[in-house]
Length: 252
Image (cartoon, rainbow, N blue to C red; front, side, top):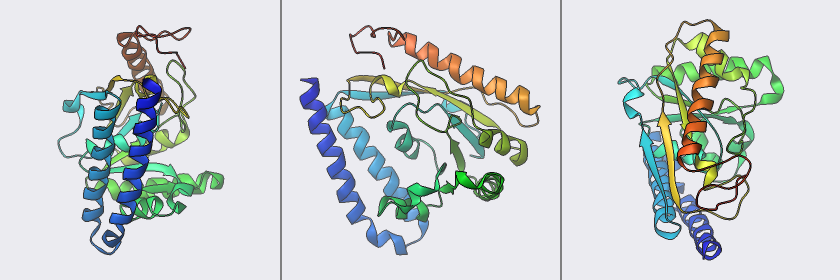
């Protein structure tokens, strides 16, 4: 039954995406606010399909940790493709820091470019960091929320990779609080997995790290807060890194 529900959902959300890609073409010539609204519609459609067809829900904790003026850096754990669209549905005006290649994808990339997502060419090294900081500073001045995945790639539940220097560069130069985000999406929507499992993904916005700390202290604090909270969320879901969770779902 899980396989069949996953099959139906995968067909449904891909179909929904294709419909949205075609439906949103006229928005490319309208003010970017129209495309932001479209992104929220697309996101909510996927989340609704996941709830109806797979039994996959989500719970948000700690929204009070987001600054009232909206200006912050959201540094999130990255376990699943689910993370890449979720923040469009919960943040007022998110700007993702992402690979520049994604902006070249037909339709989807055009729409990301229209909403001024920040595409980084990692091969250019220091030049990429300089561009990222400049673009991020402009977004912050517009009271947008910067979303970055410090590990730079998806990691399975229970795993951790070194955090990339991009988050340190943003923290050191933008004078913004960093809101760490822990989640357990990979338990239910794993990387490169066809199967989607029922359950409740928990996304927790943690206590902000104020600007002005030593960079090494900041990185240590960020890593500990995110990884410790993710481990706690995994335990709450019954996950064990060496076997299966309490429901029998195989650990990744």
